Length: 332
Length: 267
Ligand SMILES: Nc1ncnc2c1ncn2[C@@H]1O[C@H](COP(=O)(O)OP(=O)(O)OP(=O)(O)O)[C@@H](O)[C@H]1O
Ligand SMILES: [Mg+2]
Image 1: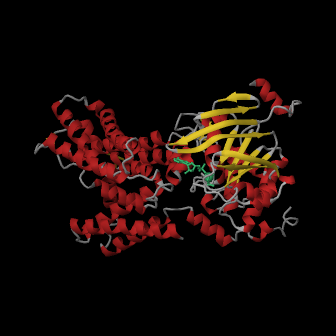
Image 2 (image 1 turned 90 degrees about the horizontal axis):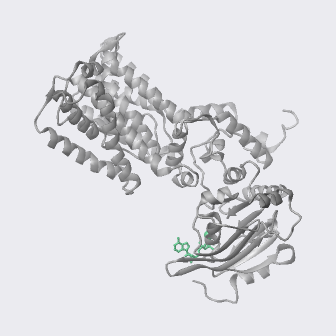
Image 3 (image 1 turned 180 degrees about the vertical axis):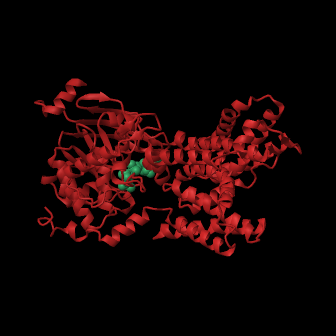
């Protein structure tokens, strides 16, 4: 078999071992972030003389990262379609305000807090989806609009009030641990696994990839492009609702400023993880690693004495660098 | 319907019933009359080339048959029966498939994924969250490609990494994949924007389809290719099928003359 066909043209272009190794690596869009994470870990361990490299510190990183991971899963789905959601932090704010106030006033049963938060978030996200798909507003501007409007609503609703003394169930979601690991981390990991499955193993994942890759191709099939695209924003909204509960529980409070700036971390993490900003190519594993990388970075920077503002500068620069890198790869 | 299908399957004793009969199609875009009573008949197993100057109405004609832009007037008969094609879904149900000029492939998805996009066989059914049967998709794609005598060294790569000819083959494979085949395959400029070697492969692919008895309507600007693969040539001009010639009995000079007319203005 092999000998008879060894002289055909196809054979002469057969990929070499090196080619196939390179192909395999190219199939790992999260390779960069994996390498960066390992390097950063080593660097911080070296600089801080081992205070970074302790189980307790890793738990601290994970606890902070849990919320970002929940949101990064939804952001990855949105970005797969070629969209972006910058209203994420503001949606967390709205859910925190409404559900938080309801819980404090006793008008919301703590057991129902989770479904209510998910539904309210999904509704807020669905408005983004509607604006993007039905009204045709470009995602960046559609969610910039709700970024401002949702925050405005939260500030109007809350004023200078601070919700405190939340029910034990909610506080437990944010604070308690199981085998030394925060519940919120288990929740985030579960969401990430579900997200991975949906993206890589289901029709939904296929379809959002097709939509981001070539909307015309998707439209030429029986894929309901608008509904599916809109649904990614609704999912991101629902996850913002979940993240709001976790955050409320962790802080045991909510205020008009809750969730501010979250979107920056989330978008940075997803893009650093290797998800293509222009749609069609995305990675859940990369999102997890991206979230962890940024968590490490912030934690490490604090330990090495750099302040909050320095963190923001570095985060902003990282987003630009990651996108610039993607643009370069796109051209080649 | 059932009898028409039976006839189509057996090849039919009645030569008189053409596969497709398009009668007096009309289509208006505001003030522009893109189709002005365009008519064309295609027999089963035939390869008809559709030629004409830019703006003659070829794409509009094809879009009307494919349900992309339903016509304002006229009739379409398939196997002798009048059909109404209001959407691409209608066309698909009737076995009419189009491979477009700007190949509608999802670049970051692999060959099998594109061949089955939107119509995946399922391993586990749950609406949007159904799990496609990837193994079966790959197997059946391999079978389709073999039937077309197409070699794609690594079908698991995203199709963005394929050559133009291979992409054309994937798009065609996608259209003809359906169980029991399709009745009419329409190719819009299948050789445009391809290198010499790629063009040769695509023409070979079209001839393979012909051997399989696939009925085809091919839009092309390249008369060389048209003469290479077609049985008949339909010339469009100003929204009408102006003339139809048997390829074997015609010449390029004649077709060019029919396309351009007597140095008259076109808008
Ligand atoms: N969607 C549309 N809106 C307005 N006018 C249109 C539209 N589609 C086509 N036309 C007009 O209808 C006429 C026929 O166009 P059509 O695209 O069918 O030509 P064609 O023969 O396919 O040309 P080409 O060889 O350039 O592809 C042209 O005058 C064109 O400008
Ligand atoms: Mg055209």
